[in-house]
Length: 156
Image (cartoon, rainbow, N blue to C red):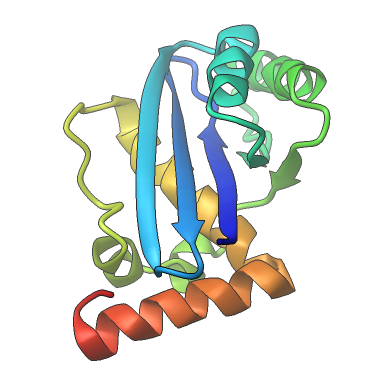
């Protein structure tokens, strides 16, 4: 059995959304685990992610928007998250909704979460995880197989 194990992290001043995906490529099953962390707590986020095993972590890259106080906090937080999870990959989310569409998130059952979060942080974390998978040639192929199975047969 081969399992693709990824985490998406959407750091936020109010909430940091974290979504962990495990895709069993033999049984074509997707298991999702998620958590909302209060604020920009990189240490707590990293501890929880690492407690899930050692997933490939994708973190939403922050783009300064000239909101000086917020920008400074977010830039520092990005650095803190990268230090806490050195193997993580920062991902620019420009155009993400054109690639990781709402329909795709719905299909993967990553659209609605039982716990609301500020600015849909869990949904954003899920988008980042899926985008990271799509950008990796091996993960892209396996995710495509899984999506094809869902579309053609309604699941495995």
